[in-house]
Length: 75
Image (cartoon, rainbow, N blue to C red):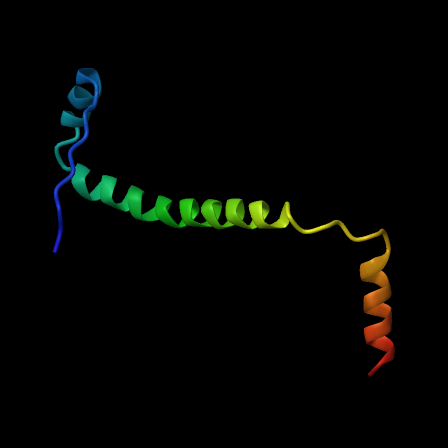
């Protein structure tokens, strides 16, 4: 099932589009949107992650190195 959306473009842009009769502009726009959605989804996830990380206290310098060394030594 599909739905119809409409967009407004400047008249000069539409005139330029009309010069390319063999281009399926609906398909071009659909592909563009499909390619952009994953980018916006990643941006949204990163934004949420950054918001959550603001509440996490910062670790003292060297903490992660100590954890890694301790983990390596336990094997």
